[in-house]
Length: 232
Image (tube, rainbow, N blue to C red; front, side):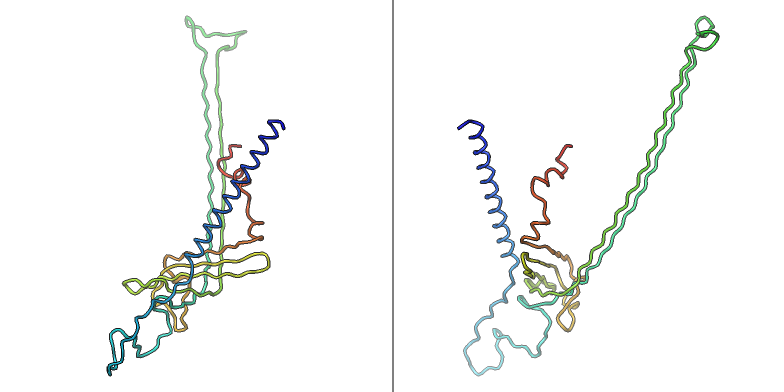
C-alpha cells in the first residue's frame, strides 16, 4: 500500500470521526434544549390536615370563586400570535472632486525655457473623481395563529413568566414554535388568552427539523465559502 493511499484513508477516517462527533454533540444539545422547554407542572399542594371540626385551615386551598384566567404556576394560558412587523431603509450617497494644477516654466537669467518659440517646461495636472452609491432594504414578517403555554414562574409583583412550545409533524419534517416572556395578569382576557404583542421580553422561535429543514440548510463547507473568512 502506498503512502498516499494510506494518508487518504487516515484523513477520511478522521473526517468521518469528526462528523460523527459533531452529530452527537448536536443531538445532545437538542435533547437538553427540549428538556428545558418542557411543560411546567403545578406546585404540589400540601396534604390536608386531619379533620378536627373546623371549616377553614391555613394549609387548605379554599377558593370562594373560580377564576379561569392563569395565575398560578403550571396554569395554562393561550397566546394569540398577532405579529406583523415591517421595516424599510434607503440610503443614497453622491460625492465628486475635481483638482486642477498649472505649473509655469522656470526662468533662467530672466528667460524661460522654450523650444521653437513655445514654452517647453509648462506642466498641468488635472484629476476628477466621482462616486454614486445607492442602497435600499425592505423586510416584513407576519406570524398569526394560536398556541398554549404554561406559567413557569410567578414574580413578586404578580407578573407571570410563561413558556411553551408546539410541535407539528408533517410528512418528512417537524415544525416547531416556541415562545417565552412575561405577562401581566391585567392583560389576560376573560377567555384566558393574551395577544403576543402584550408579552414583555417575548422570544418567539419558528423553525423546523427533519428532511425538509436539512434540504434548506447550507452545508458547513458551503457556509465557509460564503462567510467573511473566505478571502476571495
